[in-house]
Image (cartoon, rainbow, N blue to C red; front, side):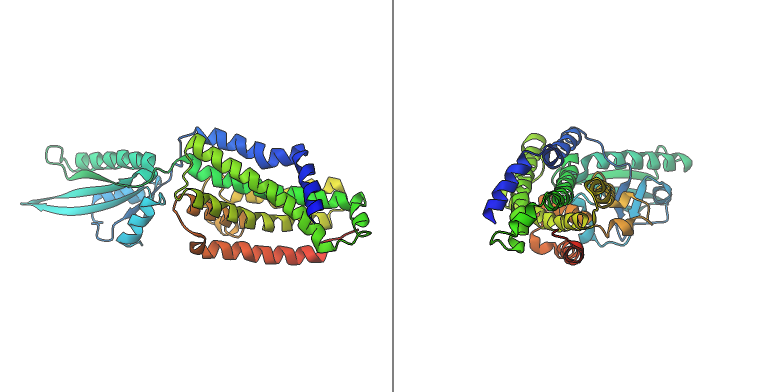
Length: 356
């Protein structure tokens, strides 16, 4: 097994396609997005449970398509999501009675986890308030005033979203394309048939190839994480412990994705049919699993499909570990779905996999 692993690892490092899919493509995307500072135009804000909703500021807020306003959260959940960057701001509108007239205090809570969007939210709220004051002829004694408070939190940058997605893409490509081509070629060139003339058992052939691919992928993952952290400030909330947990997740993801590769190598009739079959598996996940932007940006009818894909849960788990400081024990739903996919895909692989 170790001899097969050593020989396979040597062949992987000499394969241009393996190096490109594992390192070059993700490296290009990470470098490009690492220098970007932009974000989505959708502003996720929460309205405090005791906010006044009978005023023009609130009406303008919910009618503006740029805002996604959440009403169904308690104050603890709102603050937690704000500090994690899942909310861009919390808005609290309070009515203040002044003699015979009434006015409103619009309290805005933001954090560094979504600093750029917080600025946009403030700007748009100021526009809504100015519009309300003008329509109510309250220029000297304004109908509403804006008060902002910034909560302490970590800065959430573009690289914190992009790098886990690119790492997942690297693992998906390595697992599917690498495994499919290797085992198909071993079968076509009768190498596996020669293995059968030796004392080695079938499971150790698979384990030797898998071990080589695992070592290569983990080295690539460690390199991408280190580059993102030291070159672009990718957040590793718990340092080396976070790196270790991300590598564990990477190993789990790679094992599942290699199962897809075994299926492709089993059903492919020729080497030319491997790329189309592999792309049918990898391309939808690459596009729909939150690699470049969140799943919530897709149309509502498409989101359930996105949430069925294993790469979606791997990307989500990576981001929770890296930025939010979640441990593997906190990732029950994500790990359960990834494991379920592993069970399903290997059950199919056993049925379709061919040695000769």
